[in-house]
Length: 498
Image (cartoon, rainbow, N blue to C red; front, side, top):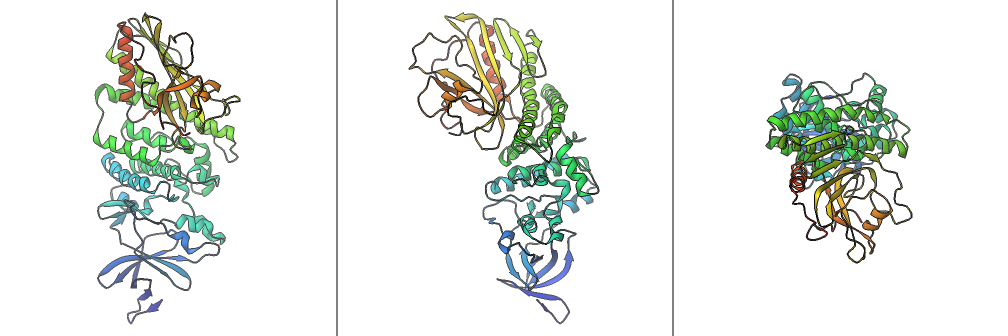
């Protein structure tokens, strides 16, 4: 580093020589300066060469990543690594402050969509680990993620005074406090905190010291955002689930945001979403089971709490849609999830949720995925055709498609046509996670087979699920429910990890 005649600092990096100007930005790990090289304006960040942390930790391959601030030049001085980046218009923090502390929901949707696009492209490649408004910059009309690698670099150093920069307490997910492996859901949690803050003007968890944030992120249930539509508030709460696997993945997050931007529910559907969200909030308190010394049993408790709140939304969506369309339907409530409904000759039963054992498969080869909870739906008719009485489907809360990413999946089973036995009166049928369903999921030939593919239930759009069961109920109620013409009805190939 050298001084110019005007006293400004010059630094030669790998591609260009830069003249450093005033310091920009506030706080954070390292110092950021305005920089100029000929007609090119940028900023240069100087990151201390801390013991135990290697230069390579600061660099992330951002090729083809949307909405990420790139590193356009790099180099070093005797004491620092130097990173040159385009100069952004402003940070999300500065923008929010200028807007009075919070943003309108359309603005929040725009910000979150840009962030989610970046996370989709980064998934499986890198985890940011320190998303916060200061690291989200407006560049060329898009909100872009900056400071990739800084958190990883800071946490690797052996210098005690730099560890405080390896995460930002208000935005750090529970697994960061437990020093567990961070993945894309860690960044999704930070997005949940940012979304809450943008909508409400305050953080979901507050404190003056890191230990206060630690206790809040580990033990306190996220409060219901005081502002925003029902769908937006429900999405924020899901992003803030304590269990990593219960949070939406980056692609699901982006899809939900795009759906919100495209449609605004009105009338009965808006009322339905409000009621369903109330059920989610009522039971989100169960997530208080998280703790610093978390066992596998406690992890499954967290997953069950998330499963229960989401199943109530699914259950209520189906029941409400049917009763609004068919007022004569007689409903018998059983618990917050379970109910039975009669319409003409048809009867639809939605079962209670059951926590699944960690090892339910008996002595049969287990599938590659894990099931945290299960339930079922059954439809029968009192005017059967032949011996056919109806059908039932399983609902499993599991990571069937992606390891560690838990969702409610709908599936159903059948008896192999090679097995000679009396014709099933219910087909396809539900099975609980156990030895019989393990046989169906096995790669070899067995008595049981999958008759309906593992189909994820989209919490942002349950219309296909609701419409299909409503149509089957209509057929059952009028005496026109017939045995499926072919089994399996839909190809199940590749619908679960095997």
